[in-house]
Length: 166
View (cartoon, rainbow, N blue to C red):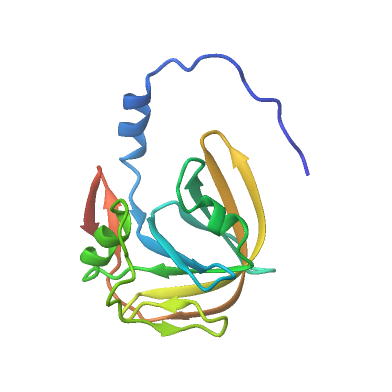
């Protein structure tokens, strides 16, 4: 593995400008979920999801280092990425909000590893946790896909700080 020295020079822009520039890149919207060894479910809305490799099948996603769910995902052996379809805005908002029982009265099926598959999603990827890397103010999770499924549909996206249909 090649690593590069961290550049300690201050950037020529502020955080607001950086965030606004990033907002011009349209992303998909996912809900990533896991189950802790005691059976508790954890999940959150994530738009930093990407493919890494076809062989082996790898995907990645990012989680803020100060997220309340970081301990649950850090010790999880598996997690599932539900790719939201255009009609699932309410689910995206539900799992993006602060504290509360996000799973109350939530309808879902279970994956082979017992993780929640949300009905009507465009796709889902059940992953075995492979590696994680702290970078900046986030942790990058890389998972090896063990099972996946897709339902061709219009996806829910995020662009310009707003949810959109792509």
